[in-house]
Length: 347
Image (cartoon, rainbow, N blue to C red):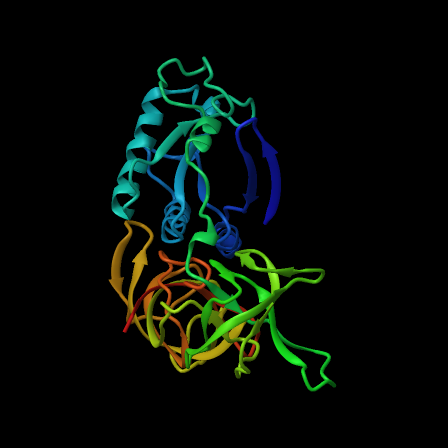
């Protein structure tokens, strides 16, 4: 995954460039998990009567599951001589795809990336196109999600003890705030037992703070001694935990799922033993239908599953908090990332 940067007088952008080939779907998932908008490139010169490729459907599905705004850029229009008829066939196919996924009002822009037609400004090459350029569409998408507005979540990376040889030594919890804000005096809950305590100090490497927010790396100190370790999460009072969750999975491992296997679910800094209890359905990428889940998950499959964890995990729905509502499954024998998942509900 490559990162590129550009800016206009109104907006600064980071482009996360992920390869489109089927064997690199995991790269696309990695990039999309950090994005706010997905530009799905469609090669107009390779489509017959607007029939979309399976990988276009898969990328659009993953982008929608991740909650991204989706923009379709129909590229290489020069190779079809800017045919309005061909574009309309592709456009209609993309609209059908969007309806089946639940994507509302998708932007569909005909472009020629090589010459820049309709990329920054609308080009006279297609007088029949009355829409906006790709850049104008992106600037109209609005700002990304402000993680500071979400509920407070703080995965503990490390427990530190300052002046440990002194009687007044105090234990602190170091990490990066995943979402929300925290202030001195706030009540927080620690770990799956949800033990309450209050924040007494907030420290960075060079100063003390009265408040910190998502993205900041800090050490939090509590008014009383609490039993917390790496993998625990400090949360706000509204949090809940569960041993069983319903989740969307994108299978990323070359080795197919084995129902007998156990996997590590990585949520924040926690790695907890888990297993896939059942596959509720798998999406058929040819028509996006939901087929029975009584078959093994294999590379690039997208499925709805029921997961059981050995100890409770934070049960944040992905739509409510993408930082803790997302996870990965790791094969403990190979250390391969087996799947990426999004929590959809609690059993």
